[in-house]
Image 1 (cartoon, one colour):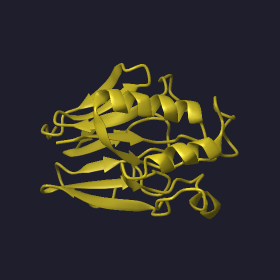
Image 2 (cartoon, rainbow, N blue to C red):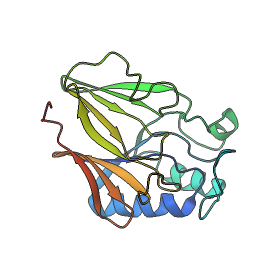
Image 3 (cartoon, rainbow, N blue to C red):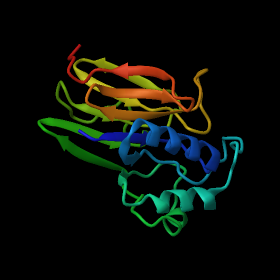
Image 4 (tube, rainbow, N blue to C red):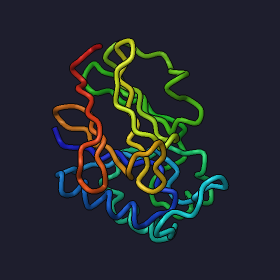
Length: 186
């Protein structure tokens, strides 16, 4: 299985995105999944370090062949799609990983407190809160990689990885923050 980098809530920070991509490259991630809020910082957020939406678009467009999926965040707009060379306007996506369903969304419509219909062993993945989560509730695996630019809840900037062992939240310094074994059902 190839490693998959999971990046959310960039909010226009070229610095945060560059660090996440560097760490993902070090980890050997060949594919990227984006959970929304790519270019704009949003009216409730401060300007993140390295705020440069045009550079973020350039960095993402340079890796468009690696980006398997991107979903729309609440700060993403049609004008952002004009800068991005791959689709970012879907509210959610459903992927199949063997017999497991993986529901991917930003988290402002579907979220961990209002899950879509999923079975035990399925995965629900979201961003939006800027707070990392890697846990299993009622047999459903819940994952949020946090934010590469504007972390909350006392966490450092972070991104996610999917590998043979499961889902991980990693700090931009390479540290492991959270781990979720997808073969556990509790």
